[in-house]
Length: 580
Figure 1: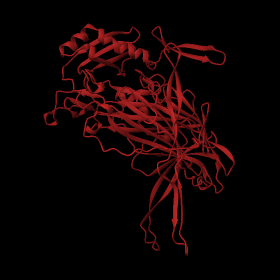
Figure 2: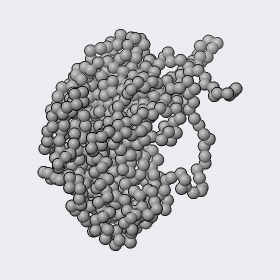
Figure 3: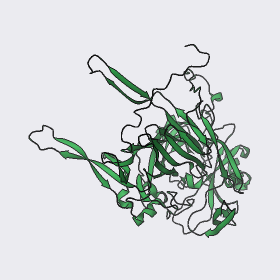
Figure 4: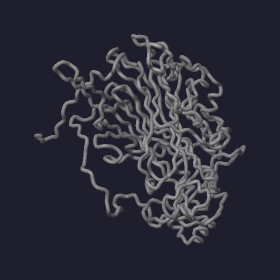
């Protein structure tokens, strides 16, 4: 916490209601920004005489101005004050104010003194028009999109899952769901019941979104510092929204509240911060048709139903939709959806043919630029595959040339397993190569002798394009590899470091792994980073259609055979008072 212009690390014993220790932190970085601090900082320009003069000079009305906080990053300074930048927007009847930046003005706010300590009005460009920026349904004009007929999900007997406090049970799954103001949803103690062994078997001790790195590519004075570490600077959970029934979640969803601590230490509730629902989208769990039997054709099909845990976090202009999906097969699927609003930069240009300079952005509408940027999301995945002593195996699919006279084939491939012994052997950049990544329990095998395991299955892959010596990349060093493996350490929770606001990148996953610790047959943690390179386009304006990516954790020789072989065909559900 921050008090008297000092950062304190305080350990509290909740059982005995005691402060165990209170130490002043003297390292690099500052704590997460509180909502109260941001609100106070955003209001300062509105009564600051130079800013008021700048607004009037542009022919604007200060009563129609709204401001937002931006962290300033780190660019080699030994020590900096706890400050942020404030950039402002013009409402003038619009609700989508992020599309209307007042370009060229930056104010620097000292958060400890809560006053403006720096101000620069460098240039004037037109404020983009409000026309066509309103995304509210009530404000849309014809022609409308062709309407679809309504659909619903009906469960007359209620959901198949139960919630006991924060423990969720569904199908063969059992796990604990918690809310964290920094990470958002935290899944822990996930286990699955194995009917063949008649026991619950551990899969995952704890998993959550550890950091979200968003560097922008604009080098101008007002933009070069625009790089965010959203979890550590603003809080993914702190920015979570109350979910809207029938909009954010389907009709069969059940909601849970979340709590966090305000700046004064008092608890604050976010209603409906999570929704849980069973998803049936017509997908097939498994099937086979066998027409070759004499006089008979057999067709067996099973429908897939899964359990989804959802949270949505709006970090300023961006909306992040976070889904943890549990499947009957034992698979855990994580999906991140990006929606919301682009970070817009004002411009003098109204047509692409006018542009003859590097803009670091794309022209989306008149005077409206969408700035190039990245999103990298790093997940902390502490798997305990049938126990906490695990190892990591990378399986490469190796092409083999055939030179046999009795075989007409010229090539084939075979899997080659490589069990990593140290952290350096488990740093992996994903690319075009054919590989599998499996966490195994080296102390347990199936009946036929295979290691019991879970494998990571990535979806789309993106890697950072910034140079290693760029200050942004130093702070976001955990993105250099898509996959890391570390031995469990209770202090290593945040891939970007404990305190990331103006941090120097000296307490990151990239630094921890330089110790090259052993990871074989130990309690290990996977860190997986997925990414998006975003070149904005006109379809992203004025609000972005959701773009999704993610990964799966799938059982690999964890079960003796297909765990959903005996899933029954669900009974047909009829609507009440309906004869057909």
